[in-house]
Length: 210
Figure 1 (cartoon, one colour):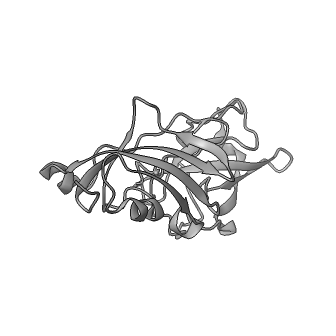
Figure 2 (cartoon, rainbow, N blue to C red):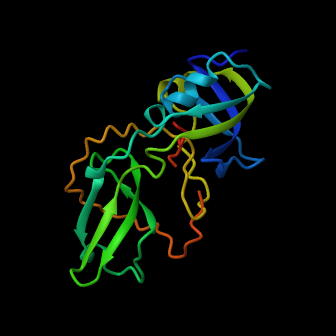
């Protein structure tokens, strides 16, 4: 059976940027997604079209078919008051916050902490925005989707991979059209990391669907 729209595909992959490994699927947790549902980034989904179980491929995905280019407008200053109760805030920390439309979680990175002005600069660009993604992928299996899976449009909620210092999510496609209302009221779900061993969604994301 070949990978096609409406098929459930299970893959194992390694994600690199500039030759550096950012994420590897655990041996016991391959990624499963519904092909054609927009649950993984477009460049990877397109490359997998027509492949079969056992196929191995190397895919280079440019930013425009991955997580898009960086948008400096997605950086904003907020009052430090919104982090009241958090013991330590420092540049480089990442956490999950609900998007303005309440439909998804987005990764927010702390860029700068100004203690004098009591402000914090946040970046809501996807952590892999602007980067060329290099995937080493093996197709484990391909099957027909069940009726309820087709109706839902996804298999399971995207898994958040264990983070390392730099959080590359699974190749989940979060439809970042950069149409954010920049007055984000980040009802911050402070799932932040205090240490810098932040490890790697979003994902593919998605299951990215990467």
